[in-house]
Image (cartoon, rainbow, N blue to C red; front, side, top):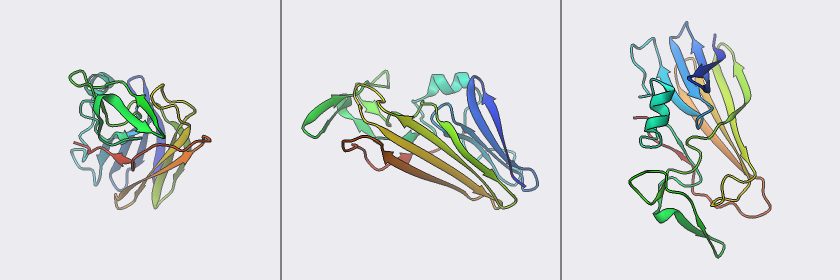
Length: 182
């Protein structure tokens, strides 16, 4: 049977999904980008995700490694943090100290709320939501982004992302992705 518990990763809220009978542990830090921080299957002595060991490590190395980050609204780099959309130029802050570029989107360190949880014998599922009317000056667009993590009793993990434009104008975005875990 799966069990979902709320926990803390330092001062960040987190979720743990466990199935002791199957040796499954999935840790998600929802208050810092809804990232997956740990995945253990069949009581493995190691996590299949190279996660963070402490909140301090998370905040001092992020976004430099961006493990498991949601790459939204852009997955790569915006040169000098600038992009054009509907005949307007927007500027985003650089988020790497050695670069003038905006890198890996804007949600990597944002808090997500817990929208839904479900746990039974066959699977566990959590839906985490990020909701904003105005993320920052360089991205003045309204949207909802739901991340649905589901792990089954065989240890198969799936992640589904649903993005809803809640504004009256078009929403600029590139196909959402997740940064590699290592």
